[in-house]
Image (cartoon, rainbow, N blue to C red; front, side, top):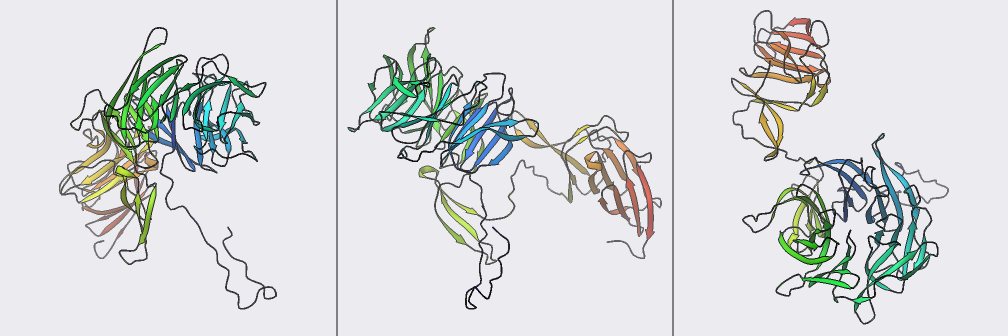
Amino acid sequence: GPQFAPEPSASTVPLSSPPMSWNYTVTAHRPSAVSHAVTAAFTGPDDLNLIVAKSTRLEVHAVDGSGEGLRPLLDVPLYGRVATLEVWRPHGAGHPDLIFLSTERYRFALLAYDAESGEIVTKAAGDVSDKTGRPCDCGQIAALDPQHRLLGLHMYDGLFKIIPALAGGTLRSEAFNVRMEELYLLDLCFLAGTPRPTLATLHEDSKHQRYLKTHEVAVRDKALSDGPWPQVAVEASASQLIALPFGGVLVLSEHSVACHSGGAVRAHQVSASGAPTLFRAHGRVDPDGTRWLLSDAAGTLYVLAIGLTDRAEVTSLTLERLGQTVAASAICYLDNGVVYLGSSCADAVLLSLSTEAHEDGSYFSELARWENLGPIVDFAVLDPEGQGQGQVVTCSGTRRDGSIRVVRSGVAFDERASLPLPGVKAMWSLHASGCGGGGGGSGGGVAPARLVLSFVSETRLLAMARDEEEGDHLAEVEEGGGFDTESATVFAASLAGGAAIVQATSRCLLLLDAASLSQLGVWSPPDGAAITLAAAHGTTLLLATAGRTVALLRCDPAAGEPIALLATRAFEHEVA
């Protein structure tokens, strides 16, 4: 809105009218509830990315080569709330994947990553809303044909929206509806390995009986015909369908998991006690679809193993409980036994699966956690310190994941590592930077971020290190090079864009190469007085000595004289 309100005109506005006021609205906390998550080769054909949808934002993370960590790449705002999120892979392996999403206001977009600009670009977009039609109670459902011939959306009762694909792999901006006999549709998916696009639907009739039915999609005729499977009755509590890569479909119910492949049916009971289990999310582990991770509303994580013959016929279903964690709304298996669980009612977690049980009986350990404030059931605004800085106390989460959290504006700190070191007198940070090798340094390369700790009679140099067992942690730099670790440090800083480091001790000033820590220059006070204070700006340094003298120096590793004395001045008293 405008920053300033126009002054009212005396001819049109009475003098007794109150002054105009404007409201400034800003998002104090970004959306944190995860509604959808997928893995794809989005930023490159050889990359592995995790794409997370959080209401009006889309996050893109890079998965480390070991699959044990996530590195944020993009955080993109969207003009709408994400309703569906799918991976569109029309060109197969060797090409970057595309991302299809639709919003709650019935807009869709096909997104790609531009490596040159480092931004997300829109390949196709359109409006798939209808002027007439009753929005379905179960929400929008997106289904992709495994052979990428078309994409379908179920948004209104009795209608199925079809978006055909073009030869280049993108989607047409124009879509059409086909009529469906099933009015109360619970879930749907496209079957794999069929000559024509075949849709499997899970629906409920007026007698509350649920059925599994298939339809063939005729794109040219813009109609649905009966599919290859006959309609079969399923459990009354069936809620989800999972298409299998080798053909067939899994039906998830409160009491069983069944595999349907035409006339053959294999089922496995979920709980031996008969207690109902409401599955909320699933994720594929193996590319061939023989192992799946399932999560229920109570936060229990399961693994489902499917036994197959050489002819891809299902012989067995095995369901095992892995342990208790957050109630997931999205499950993404990354690599190397690491899985991401996103939740709309709890924190998102990164788990490492194991084959042996831990002390608590679970088969996983938590690697990382991302806080989620949603859903906020209730909140109150407090000012406990009476300084006018209000804090929001929220009742967040549901069931066993419920918590009370305090939210306030300010700078947040994320602890990466800690190390107990008593007796620290002063501390400086040396920022990480790429270095060229100029200035007579030995080698150059990349200078890591370091931390200088000064004690009474010594100095220690620390840096962030990573290994498979401990992850990120602070470690002491053993090879100090020309860095003086036998004396207390008066001052330390990074110079020349991070290519060089200066260290001032009581005896001298050292100029070092940031990458190799080799000495580029040394300067000592001519009168032998001890250095007491120092400050730096750019490549210029100001030193104060115990002899009541202040010296101005220029430190340039690329110059013929790395440390040059520019001027000195004596004062009547010692500089404090």
